[in-house]
Image (cartoon, rainbow, N blue to C red):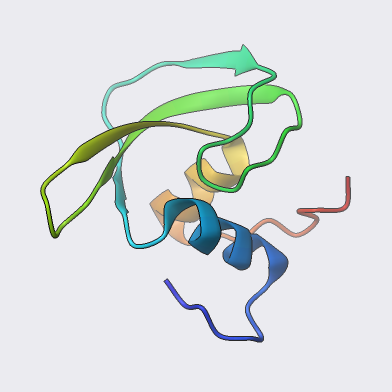
Length: 86
């Protein structure tokens, strides 16, 4: 994850919350939630998708709940256009 000073606010938030964890998806479900996203910290209510953060140094697996924006970012690299314009 890039931590350059010209990183977008979205990428900076993901770097802050996720750090160097590798994110993997399973056959998990999604549900509506008002809880903060574990990847970007967004507190907007919406769907949260099950995922796992994996620490490659220790092998630790951390269960995560990701918002739709982070789901697409971690799966495809797509950054949201209007993130943070809440």
